[in-house]
Structures are given as C-alpha cells and as structure tokens.
Image (cartoon, rainbow, N blue to C red):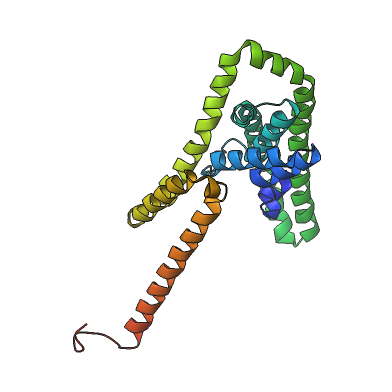
Length: 251
C-alpha cells in the first residue's frame, strides 16, 4: 500500500480499500468496510503541500481497522486511536523524502550518462525503503494492538470518559476532512446543488426503507444533474458556434 500511494497510484492504498482487505484478513469484512469508509471521510481533504505531509491515511486506515476488530472498539474510538500511527507514518514519509533528496543529484548524473538501469535501481530502492518503513510501523502496531487488546478493553470500562473522548474526536474528524475538501473544491455557483443534496440526504435518512441506500440514491441524483449540466453547456457552445440564435429571431 505504501508503494502504491507514491508510485503505482492504483488507489489501492485508500482507506476504504485497505479497511476491506484488512477486515477480510481478520475475518470481519463488514467492520473493515465501515472503519475504512469512516477513515476515508476523515482524510478525504488531506493533501500534501510541498514538503508538508498530512497524517498518513494508509497506516491510519489499517490500524483503525485492526483496533476495531481485534480490540472490539467502536468505529469512532478506533479511528481516534489510530491517529498517532498515522502521524508516525507521516514522519516516516518525511524522513524518506529527506534522505532521498541528496540522491537526486546522483540521478541527474545518471540521466546525463544515459544510465537508465541506475535510475531504475534508485526508484526501486526508494519504493522498497518506504514499504519496509510502513511494514515495520504496521506490524509493530498489530503486535502491540493484539497484546494490548485486553488492556484496552479494561481501560474502556474503567475509563469510559477517555473512550467517549476518542469517539467524539474520531466522529468529528470525518466532518473536518470533508469540510477541507469543500473549502478547496466548492465554488460559489455550486452551493445550491450542495444544499439540495444535503436536504435529500436528510429526508431519505428518515425513511427506514431507503436509509440504507441513501448515498447511492444521492449519487444517482448527482450524476443526473452533472449530465444535464454537461449537455446544456455542450448545446450552448454548439449553437454559439454555428450562428444560430441572435437578436434577429427574437431570442
């Protein structure tokens, strides 16, 4: 997953995918999908800017699923507990980028000489190092999470307020992540569509027979609006280009 995030880019590293995979491995696919989807919402607006890296969604999603299944934690509490591991993943990425920066001069020299094999070796070295770093963090978290499973369960009973706090924090993070995404992507002329979607989601959510498929239904509505908007814009461009319309015919 670490290699895919920065090199293959097949989106296998996304939490909603890793959650399902880890959940299937641990024998609870449903919980894996729920946790992965929750963590996906939390990190959907996270973007690296320059050398600054957000908490790593790959490790965070994996560890959240591990905690939720192996320790029996609630989804929101597992997400909150996985954040420190996501921060460790961020440090690992920053460390590797820092180490690899001086190596780029060597890659430039190899490019001048036409040494394609040397450049390939450098790329494989970076990919392997990143995969190894992520593997160490995740295995350490898995072993520690399994060993501390009973302790976490006891703490959740003795210090219920801590778990409630983790749950509240984890519950807020997905909304913060989506708010960041809206701040980046949403333009003023799309606010109306956003509010329509919010209203439809609220109405459908209160209908027991439809609440389970609310997101799918809203997605269909969004696709219909997007297709209509696209067709309208295409028609306007075509009419503007062929001389149709104008003041002469009263339009």
